[in-house]
Image (cartoon, rainbow, N blue to C red; front, side, top):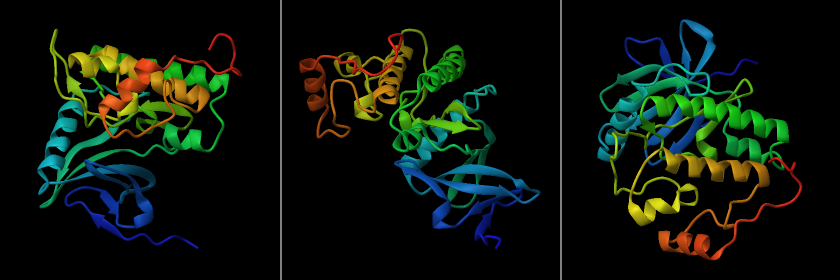
Length: 246
């Protein structure tokens, strides 16, 4: 039996946004991501990030992401945005490809950890995608397992809501992102750059290998001081069970 889906049409576009609760792909401080369709091609599936214009926080987040994705060339290891910006009376929409493999977090939740060959592919795909960001002068600032998607077996970097275009020697005092993935130097110096993304990638890779976080077993913290205390008093351990070269 064919599934009947309630949809909302975006005016003057071929896009139909699902209004089914089951088609909400993700939620965050920015708003939500929902599944969408193309009325002229039923075989195509999209994901749409929805920002409410009456929410100043969401509006700013949408404009920030818009400024980043508009500068991205097409890359097989970056989530592709089909339509950069659409607006209605109450919302702004960013239409992107729907990745059929879910997030790296979801993949790891279904398995013990990635195999050695899967780790190699993940590293290769990530480096290819991040090289593109680096060449565009973009710092992602929120690299984590939730922001790595899979599509047709390929890993893609996603979610540019916290990303910034960095000028030479530029600095920022803002600390944003998921604490357990953030580099300690960010708290000490307030600096920002690609090296901080490299640290976040290291935490992501460590979790993909060992299904635990380096320095700590906790994901959530009451304060940044707690996270730094765990890092300062803990030794980095490499659990056994992986190939010697990993």
